[in-house]
Amino acid sequence: MSTSYKPLVERFFIPRPTLIEWHKRAEDEKDNWRVKHLEYLRVQLLVEKETLQEIQHYALCAEDLFILSVYIFFQNINHHIPKDKLRQGLREFALHVRAGVEYQHDFAQRIWSLRMGDESNKKIVNYYRVFDVLDRLSAAQYALLIGSVIDFVKMTKKKYKIETKTFLEGKTWQELFTYDKAFSIKAIEEYFESKELLK
Image 1 (cartoon, rainbow, N blue to C red):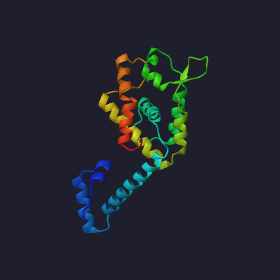
Image 2 (cartoon, rainbow, N blue to C red):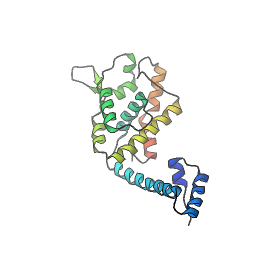
Image 3 (cartoon, rainbow, N blue to C red):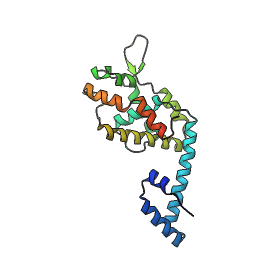
Image 4 (cartoon, rainbow, N blue to C red):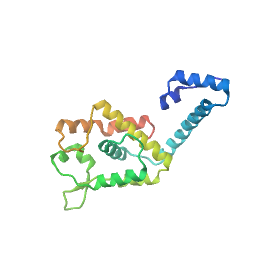
């Protein structure tokens, strides 16, 4: 019986020769950690596929993924973050009114887009729909989504060679232009459509 290693290689970054060796030893020894580990990884792939299909029913939009992506970028989050901690941090980030010439740039206007009142010039992040989506996600759905967003941010940082520890304060117009391009709706749509999180 032939075994396809490609999904395991692509998802878990295990070298194909290692998987072949595990499989051979598993056939010889029948019941050992390799057998159990390979079975676990295969089940994990099936669970992730089903979880992905469940997430698709929520009809995510690129703007929600944009808000999550820039928050994760600004906070330099590189690993899974519990949902409650993300909600708390995102709310604090969203409600903190920021001033400065950098916040007049188009990129900043895409983030801080919700006017606080008819007469106010102060704007906050429109995080309400993101919270609605987060509230509906199960633990597995949330883990898959947030893992994909973190992967997108890591890829974007590497591709554009960008980092920040100060939000937008002190950034040049060229840096802001690069951020705008890196986190464009087109870039987000292309990435998350390839991951089947957007249709």
